Each structure stands twice: as C-alpha cells, then as structure tokens.
Amino acid sequence: VSGARTDAVALTCAAAEAHARENDQAATFPVEALATMRRTRLLGLMVPADYGGGGGTLSELVDATIELGRADLSVALIFAMHCQQVAALARCASDRLRAHALPAVADGTIYLASVTTEPGKGGDLLISDSATEQVRAALRIDREAPIVTGGRHADAFLVTVRTPGATSPAQVDLVYAARDQLRLEVLGDWRPLGMRATESVPMRLAGTVPEWQVVGEHGEFRKIATTVFGPVAHIGWAAAWLGTAAGAYSRVVRHIRGPAGRSRFNPASQLLLTRLAATRARLEMVNALLRHTVSVVSSGEDVATPPVQLLINTLKTEAADSCFRAVDELVELTGLQGGYLAGSPLRLERAFRDLRSASLNYGNDRLRLANGSLALMDSGLRFA
Ligand SMILES: Cc1cc2nc3c(=O)[nH]c(=O)nc-3n(C[C@H](O)[C@H](O)[C@H](O)COP(=O)(O)OP(=O)(O)OC[C@H]3O[C@@H](n4cnc5c(N)ncnc54)[C@H](O)[C@@H]3O)c2cc1C
Image (cartoon, rainbow, N blue to C red; front, side):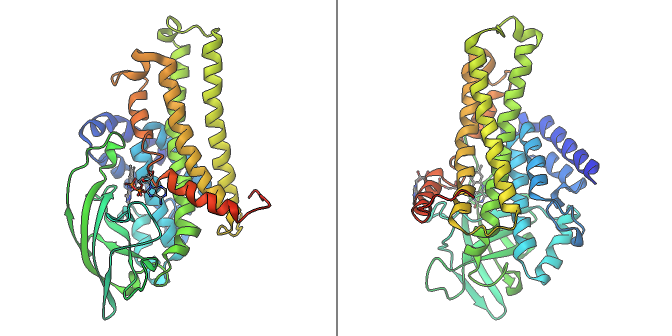
C-alpha cells in the first residue's frame, strides 16, 4: 500500500511540476494534477479503509503534502484542504452521510472544496452571516463566498451557514452539498500575487439540500472546527508551506554545489555558511513543531484544552512566518539573477509569491489574538 501511495504522490508531483509555470502565469487550476490524484486514488488518502479509502494517518498526510509542496504549493494546498474536508466527514458526519460521500471520495470521483469565508465577517471562522431556511426536511442555502479554492472544479462543497432559526451568528452548521444540488455562479476573477493555480474564485452558491447532509448535529460547527477542521487544516497547511520552502532550499544547495554555482559561490565563505545554517534552522524548527503537533493530535489527548489549541495555532502562525522568511533569505543569498528573476531555474520567485499568502490564509493576527486569550487561561504554562 505504501509503495502505491509513494507512486501516487510521485505521479502527482510530476504532473504538478510539468504544468506549474503555465498554471501560475494564467492563474488556472492544475487540472492535470487533480486528474492524477483522482486516478491514483490519492484523493481518498484520508477516507477510512471501511469506505474503500487509504485509511491515512496524519503523519501520512504530512509526508504526502510536503512532497507535493516541493513540486507546487498550489497543488499541495488543494490536496491538504480537500483532506481537511474528508477528515471532517469521516470523523463527524452521520453514518448515512459517510456512506453516501466517502466511497466516492475514495475512488477519486469527488474532490471536495471548502466554503467558510464570507464577505462581511472576513476570516472569522466560527460565525456565519448566511441565513438558511428550513423547508420541511431540507435546508435552503443562498450564500456568497469571496474565495473558493477550486470552486469551478469541485464535485462537492462543505459550506458553513447559520443554523436555521438561529438566534446568534455563532450557531453555525457545516453542510455537505454536491455540485448538482447547487446553482453555482462565479462572481469575479482571480488575480492574486501568488497561489495563482488554486483558482480561488468568488462564488454564489444556492440550492436546497436534505437535512441529513448537515455534518453532525445542527449548530455543531464550533466543535468540528476545534476538534478536526482546525487541527487538520493547520497541520496540512504547515506541511504544504514547509514542503515549498524545503524544495526551494534544496534547489539552492544543489545549485551552490553544482558547476554553475561553483563559479559564483564560494562554499568556504563564512557569510554563505552562516546564512545556510540560519535558514536551515528555521525549517528544522517548523518540521519539529509540525511533527510534535501531529503526535499530540494523534495521541487521543483532548484537543480542546488551552495547551493543545495553543500548540495547533502556534504551528500555523510560526510555520507561515518561518517558511516565507526562509525563502526570503534564500532570495537574499542567491541574489538578483538566481533568486529574484522569474526565469531563474531556482524558482524562488514563485515560491516567494506563493508563501506570502501563508500568514493571510486564516490571518495570523486572528490566531495570535486567540492564543493571547488561551495563554491567560493557562497560567501554569503547561506545554502540550
Ligand atoms: C490561497 C488561499 C486560498 C483560500 N481558499 C479558501 C477557500 O477555499 N475557502 C474559504 O472559505 N476561504 C479560503 N481562503 C480564505 C482564508 O482562509 C482566510 O479566511 C481569508 O483569507 C481571510 O480573509 P481576509 O484576510 O480578507 O480577512 P480577515 O481574516 O478578516 O483579516 C484581514 C486582516 O484584518 C486584520 N483583522 C481583522 N479582524 C481581526 C481580528 N478580530 N483580530 C485581529 N486581526 C484582525 C488582520 O490583520 C487580518 O490580516 C483562502 C485564502 C488563501 C490565501
């Protein structure tokens, strides 16, 4: 099984690398990499084996995502976000919804997109301004989404909406909606600095879905976010960012050691060596934090406690900052020709633009605000 998985990851990396430049330039979705993930059943990695999936662990998700990140950050993020949705279904959905959706994810038929951001509330995950209406045993949804990764290509969506009849915006449902249950309208274009191949378009989603497609109980999104959605998102994103920064770093080291680099760089230069060491140290720390977070989250410990939530949020904020800084340092180290120009074979320019999104992809400021409050609740400073 693990050999097949390694092949699936390698084939997806090859498809991603072959088209990364054109998808970046045109800001178009990596359809070739998605087709490979479907064909090789990599999309089913996090589906439990009982439903025909790969039964992947968080460590396996991290390993696969790091490899994809070395090839292309957009592809790695698309994969990690899909796996986050799958983990939420596998852990929190009813038997009926699991039996309905998971076998189709396992066989590569369903790529799942995420709809949590809303126009008014920005990135505040735990509230929703999108009212729903209960129509007998169904929910009527009509929701704007300013940024939906792969929205044009997804086969189904997990959408946050306000619980029908809610008295507060904090009563939020997570709803599974298949593409053919929705009227989808793309409301604008996608012209970002980086992450261009995620094709994260603004959309309107409207339709009626049966009530059994609510994930878990009504109003349970906060619990899902705390126990599954948040942890798996932060772990998956950190792996994607680390993969891209590690890929950039190894291209630079190979270049310095190769024939072209030897004429430009002096491997005995103390400036070069201390810079390489400092950047490597950043990546070592992200890797250590990532692996530690995976082991804590996988251990069965209650993830809702302040020390564990602090750890999960810290992984996101520090991985976002450190991976971007690492590539910034590599640009400085390799200079204008090697680091800054878009045509350079070191491909730092795209990694730099892509990684600039990391602190914004669920705002670091929001998480640090949350962590400040959590820190006040943990006066003994107990490390998870
Ligand atoms: C490549 C990419 C793909 C994405 N894909 C999706 C997707 O598929 N689906 C989806 O739903 N979303 C997606 N997002 C959205 C993402 O996860 C964030 O939720 C969103 O980018 C936040 O938007 P914002 O920065 O405009 O808003 P905000 O989170 O509101 O933040 C804006 C800025 O305001 C400040 N700020 C605002 N409020 C506070 C506060 N209370 N405390 C502290 N600071 C505050 C911060 O400085 C923050 O950086 C994606 C984002 C990226 C970058």
